[in-house]
Length: 67
Image (cartoon, rainbow, N blue to C red):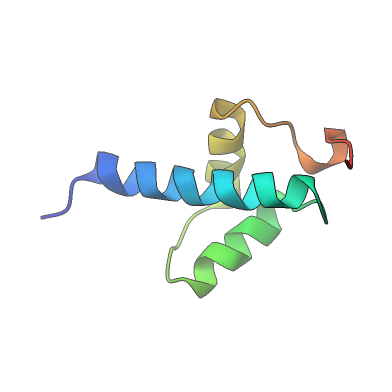
């Protein structure tokens, strides 16, 4: 059986990488991140992505400045 904490950590890491990549390019909304994760076989709610983004201290797309 897979440890749920490990799965959550992997998803959190994946979201963080995508958001950090987006900081230098196109801003990604939570829904866009959900769509990308879904393509990888990870089913996750938009609200969960937003919660993880908040835990990582990364503001929503509309509040992030483009570098």
